[in-house]
Image 1 (cartoon, rainbow, N blue to C red):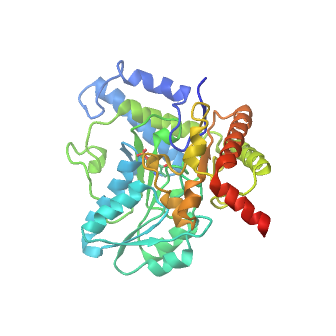
Image 2: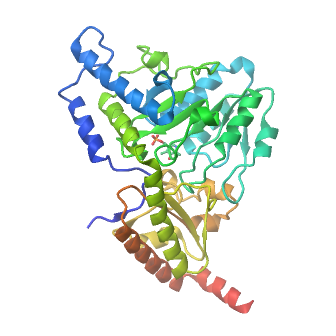
Amino acid sequence: MKPIYLDYHATTPVAPEVLEAMLPWFANNFGNPASRSHAYGWKASEAVEMARAQLANALHVDPTEIIFTSGSTEGLNMAIKGLAEASMDMGKHIVTVATEHHAVLDALAWLGKKGFEITTLSVGKDGILNLDSLKDSIRKDTIMVVVMWANNETGAIQPMSSVGKICRDRGVPLISDATQAFGKIAISPVESGADILSISAHKIYGPKGVGALYINKNLRPRPEALLHGGGHENGFRSGTLNVPGIVGLGKAAALSHMDLERSAKEIGQLRDHLETTILNELESISVNGHAQHRLPSVSNLAVAGVESQAVMSRFRSKLAISSGSACSSANPAPSHVLLAMGLSGTEAKSSFRFSLGSPTTKEEIDQAAQIFIDAVNAEREISPLWQLMKSGTDLS
Ligand SMILES: *Cc1c(COP(=O)(O)O)cnc(C)c1O
C-alpha cells in the first residue's frame, strides 16, 4: 500500500484529463510553435495560444499578458530581477514580507548583494502582514513590493486588495506569488492591483517544470528578460516553448476553475474534519496561521512536546505529510515562516503541515488522523520534554 498522500502543497499528481490533453503534443504533434513557415509549427502555436487563453480566462486578464515560464521559481526570479534591472534609475529599494517563499527571499538576497536595499516586513502571529507597516515602508526610491497571495506552509491569505491599493496609490509595482492561491481560491490580479503574478502547473494537477507569469500590459517599466535568444514570448523569455507542458498547464487551469467554489468548500470541510478530530483527541495543539483567512486545503499544527521528525519517522510508510515546507525538508532548520510568526525554534520544529487535494477522501482523512494521533501519543510517552511540560501544568 502506498502511504496516504497529504502533501498536495508540495506537488500534485497530473490529473487524467491533463495527461490526456498533453499526450498528442510529444510525438504526433511535435512541431515548434516558432516555426512560422509550415503546418507543424502552426498547429503547435495554436495549442500554445489556446493554453494562453485558458490561463487568461482563469485570471480575467488579456492573453497578451501571459508569459510561459518553467515554473514559479523562474517566474519570480524573472519578475524580481527583471524589474530591478529595468528600474535601476528609479531607485534600489524593495519591500517584501518575511514569510515569502525562498524563490522570492533568495532572489532578493542576491539583489541585496548587488546593492539593492531590501525591507522585509514582519507578520503577526496569524501570518498576516500589517498594512500600516507596508504603508510606512514605501519610499520615493521603492521600485517594487513583493507579497505572496497565500502561504504554502500555513495557507495564510494576505489582504491583497488592500496591499494592491496601497501600491497603486504610491505608484509602486506589486509582484505576487500566487502559486498556492491559483486554482484554490478565486483571484483577480486586476481587481486586486497586482501587476505581476506567478503561477506553477504542478501545484494545480498539471506537470512539473512549467508555469506562467501574468504581466500587466500597462506596467512601466517592463521587466527585463533573464533569458536571451530567439525573442520568444515577446522577448520576455527566449527558449523553445514546452508545448506539452503548456498544454497541460492550460488544461489544469481550466479544470481547477470549473467549479472553484464547490471544490474549495468540499476540501475545506475535509480539512476542518481532520483538524477537529486531531484537536479533540490530543491536548496542547494549536493551529498555525489565521483561522479564517487561509486556504481551505491546509492545516499547519504545532504539537507541544514532540519533534516533528521523530513523529513522522513513526509513520513514513503509511502517511506522507510535511514538517514545515517541503523545500526546506532537506535541512531540518525550523521553518522561516513559522519563526516569522513568532513561534520559537522548538515550536516550529514540532509543527506539521497537512495539505489536502482534490483526490483526498473522508476515509483517507479518518485514517490519517488516527495514524497521526497514535504516533503523537507514542512519541509523547517517551518525550522528556512532554513529561516536563505535563508535570509543569500539573503543578500549577
Ligand atoms: C511551489 C512554490 C513555488 C515554487 O514553484 P516551482 O514551480 O516549483 O518552482 C513558489 N512559491 C510557492 C508559494 C510555492 O508553493
